[in-house]
Amino acid sequence: MQLSVLTLRELLQLHSGVSAQLRDRGYCRTGNNPGGDIAEHLFSQTFNWQLAANSNAGFDAACPDRGRVQIKSRRLNRPNASRQAGDIRDLALHKFDWLAGVVFDSDWEIVLGVLVPFELVAANSTYIKHTNSSRFYLRDSLIGMEGVEDVTGKLKASWNTMGAI
Image (tube, rainbow, N blue to C red; front, top):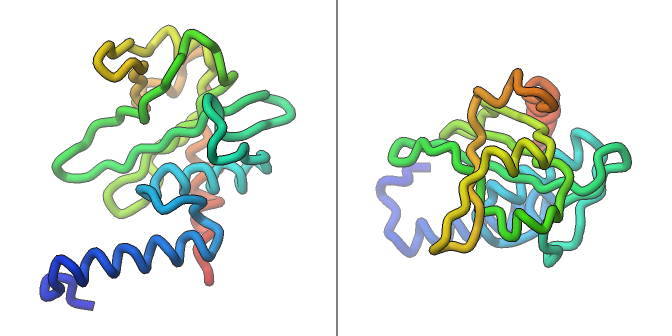
């Protein structure tokens, strides 16, 4: 398909169709940017976690051996290569026990996957007053920090088996 010849409306319609297909196939639970939904699906499939309801505030999945897990993702692209995980609201209320993070490159290849204990997230986050949230970055330097589990290989293995119709 030659995307460069499509009109704005045609591109948006294609985007809507792709979003609907991702939901119909069970990879996404919402019509939002797919990165977050894809990350939730990927982690839940890889580790057999039970996803919480979409409207649940504070954590995305329950894990028998880890407790409450907040799942974050970031897709790197040319204009924005930031590793910032999505906003974390009410961090001081300790609504999760672990943060599961995945970073995709611009072509949706996994470049980093980590499980980070809450204490490390709290110690390495910055409060942002104007958004009333905390900011945490999914940096490569997390690997090797005490308590952090590098799950990049496990996620890549799952990712490579996902996606068949």
